[in-house]
Structures are given as structure tokens and as C-alpha cells.
Length: 378
Ligand SMILES: [Fe+2]
Image (cartoon, rainbow, N blue to C red):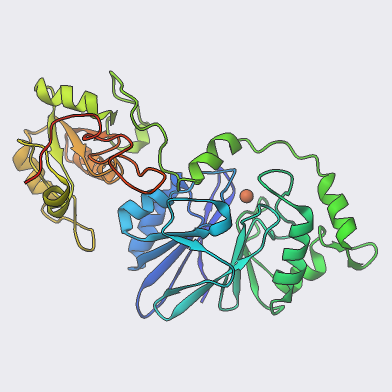
């Protein structure tokens, strides 16, 4: 069975979904933030449940949707320990194995593009990230890169896999989808000198890599810090007087800060609805006088089949409605749904508990409670 290969044209990134036929448990590799709805739809179409979100490294050219996928699916992030992606539940070391149903994904430490970079072996498939591309390899001139390490990773780790192992790269810029270890050994011009008809030596490879003179990646300053926190936002706490505009294609009316949501609610300008699960409201706390209408139901986080009817019963038709969840992610699809039902729907940024801090604790970085807005516990 092949992985499901998905492509992001803006960054030429391949995202992979693999799953176990019998148990329907799935893994996603290198998801892209702007493609999250596509990826969630792919999981739904195949009737699979996401267990792990895996990164090959901290990317410089796109932002991951890992943080969002955790919120939507309850899956765990598993990222290379050497990449320093602190919020991940699982810090992968060389040889670690992730189980999904009867399938396994094995982590191979393949440094060079970045010091922490990993490739992942699934049966006779290998996901090579930016370590090995089809007819190429990732650059080594920034982000802790090392041409020497990359040469070792390609020649001593990847090229010792069976020749018929299918290679699935993190990127391709020419429409190629996959290759094999044997084909890359023979034809990859970075590694093999076609004129001399032999593999380049370490020194020849290093010289080649050091003379590529590539421009700085366009999104590196923005993408790398965001990817070190699984793509979760860094601007929690910004107080704003107007909603933040969202793209027309977003399918809802805008994003508002907790403080602005509070003012709109108190002045009667908008209706506030808490869409967290009943369990979250009971355990973490609730806002007095605000209806609780679950968008997703714990455990399992399936969409509440009564959501539409309950929202229509609680809020007058066509009114402005503010949707609050835990961290401001689940409230986005809830706002899209409310907008589709004819409301003017807004997502409340940061949610009730805010973003996780560097110890993965919530409640310290932004959120309704952190801003001192009214709430209580039972
Ligand atoms: Fe990369």
C-alpha cells in the first residue's frame, strides 16, 4: 500500500497520510497550516483516526498545522528530539518506533539539512524530508546544516536501505512524486558524478554544497519560530479594538480578541456562545450566563449532531455571534458552521485558556481567563 500524497503548491511541500487498514489508525507527516481543512477532509474520507503528527524537521518554508491538528483530532505530535520543538508530546530519538494499528513508523536520524532532521521508514517506504530529494537534497547552509553530516546521512543511512525502497521526499519542484533508493544512488547528481561515473567523495560533495549560492528562504524568519511551537500563534495577549479581517474564503466574519468579545457581549452587540465540551466547562471553568453548546463531543471529539439546532435555539436568526473554545482553534470551524447557518459569526482568539507556554501549560499565555474577564468554577 502506498501513502496518500498531498501537495501544497505555495511551498511545493508534500504531506503524507499513512494508515492501517484494519484499525483505521493514521499518521500524517509534514502537514501545512493552510491545508488543514483539506487534510482533515482526507482523514474523514478514508474513515481514519489520526494518532500521530510527525515532522521531518523544523521547516523554513511553510508553517506546520500540527498544533491545529492536535486540537481537532486529539492526535499527538511526534517530532525529532534534536529539532527542539518543545510542545510535542513525543521527542523522537534514533530508532524510535511509532505504532499505529499493526503498522510501524521508525525514526532514522539523518542530520545535515538541519542537525535534528529525521527520515521515517514505513515498510519499504522511506520519507526523507529534505535529507534526500528526487535528484537533489536539502541545502545545508543555514539552520544548523552540515554538508558533511548530510553526506553521511545519505550514503551511510539512506543508501544502505534496500534498493527497491520507495523514496517520498518533503518537496518536489518539477512534479515528480516519488523515486527509489536504487534510482537515487545511480542518478542523483548531487551524489553521483555522471561524467566520472562514480559517487562523489565527501570532499567533492562538501565543495558542491558550499558553492550553491542559494537565496535565503523567503519565510524562514516567520516559519522556523512558529514551527518550534507546532505552528501555534505567538501573538496571544494582543488587545484590539476591531475584529481582525479574515480572507473571504475563510467562511466566517472575523477574529476578535477576548477583550473585544467581552465588550460586544456586555453591550448587547453580539451573543457569546461557549462551544467547548461540557467536561471542559465543568473542570476548567465557565462564564456565567453564557450558553454552552458543544461543537465537538468528548471523548472522540465527533461533531455534535445537535449543534445547529441548539445554536438556532440560543441565538436569534442572523445575529452577531461570538464563538469561544479552549484556545481559539476549534472555534474556527464552529464559526464557519454558524456563518453557514446565516449568523454573522466571529472566532474568539486565544479561547478560554490561551496558548500553551514553554512547559505546555495553558492559562499563562493569553485567553479569556488570563485577561481577567469574568468566569467561575462550580
Ligand atoms: Fe527544510
